[in-house]
Image (cartoon, rainbow, N blue to C red; front, side, top):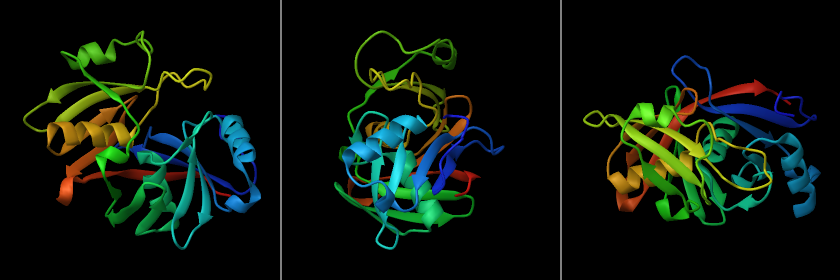
Length: 224
């Protein structure tokens, strides 16, 4: 169902769009999570939609949301929270790992989170942008891989691609990945301007107390 043929009550967003409004990572948002009670029901819908993540909104006022991949539940993820914050106009999202702060700044929506909240990622630096672009699919190996290279180190510009390598989910490459961008920004200790996938843009910036901000553009593709 990646052609966005979705049931009623589900919005589809593109998160971390490029400057031209294209690309970004598709996100399904179930505005009323009560319609999908229980793990099995939610996981079945996430598999049916086939997006890298789907968000179930359990309390739109308090910002309580539940994030699912086609195969599992996530306590934290970047692009779903940026998308939910934008769609619901939230300043706080209450997650199992802790409160995630959100803000709007012109065309960008930002969230602030702790790097240790992100699921484990292998951040592998390549020698050049050309080497990253030359990847034809997930490199051999196990575990979630973020392949990146400097496009302009002085300016903090990065080229990246992301490969979940989660068996059985049907997602070979993730178009735009906020959690991995946050981890890379924390490791390098600096703000980054990341071009990921086919042309998505993710911005990061160090924040107080070891936290990191992740920002990007969000567009509504299908309204429920």
